[in-house]
Length: 198
Length: 198
DNA sequence: GGGTGTGAAACTCTTCACAGCG
DNA sequence: CGCTGTGAAGAGTTTCACACCC
Image (cartoon, rainbow over all chains, first blue to last red):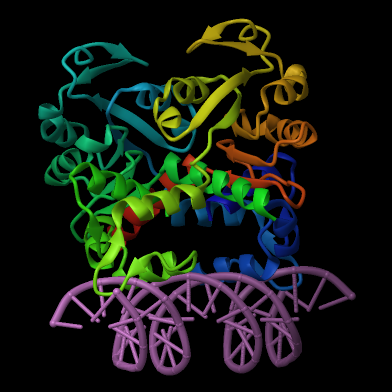
């Protein structure tokens, strides 16, 4: 869905009015049948014989993905990766505002990064309430990850993007997405290794 | 497999000799049946009635994942994310050495980051050959991504970790892993949105 | 004609459950 | 007895192919 929305953005920029599943297939690499089924899952967005209205489908997808409204985000863990994400402009473009940054390292607390003052994790619950934060990005070390997640859940956050290389245990109703560089890069080295042998 | 290897590292550190699929299941969150099938896919590593030898299985998994040898990596695109990955120590621990960094921005070329001098992309093929680089990490803008990938493929690289939010077209035999923050964060906002409605 | 939406078939992945081995 | 390895069942996903509507 994300990919479709992004593609529609490009198509809209080049002035296309209507788009078929076949055309979407060319650009995204998914099969046309797959695309039609994905879209039909959420409603009847297409017109037979014509295709999908680029603008119409964009609005639908934005609503489905929840990017029709602004989300406030907390970032926990201001290491190299955390800093990079703070500076990353893509989030803002997608309707995500990083509203607060936290770290447990006393040397980092109080410093200013990309316009935000780093706060201690003890302030988390308070700030989440004040700023209406609903989503968190965790870029902590693996050892701290479960403890930080528990604090996040306690302060009412129910969606977390986790970069720490550790499988986290969360209660029902808390959604966690994991981005694990270890897994990605080991998958590549695995496929390179396979080729040595054949 | 990556996750299993990581878990075994922790178990080895605490001195465990042998581990069952049930214990691995507790720690990783995968079901015991899943774990047994995953491992049995690659060989008969376990002993019935006992479990898997922690050290033995570690060696097997390292070989399977190809992290029993050192890999040389090129990083292309020295923006915020690229810098963060250059400074990230996890790669070295896993046997990946970032041997060269490239960027097309003249202002960045020549600067030194984490001990590496940033080179222009025109030097790519030459340096890949000299340094024996087999793997690349792309942290370029989306617009440049396909062109950079084509250069990488031309210079002989056959495994790429892509952070640019664009689906890339690569010839047969070139393995691409995509890490797309857009997709991850939109998935979370989608699941938060669903909850508004129910 | 053109292209969606969707049953049905094919395929893949996961879980069950247990034979068989240490 | 304990735990792996694996057929078989079950669940989920993708592809096919075409009825149906614009």
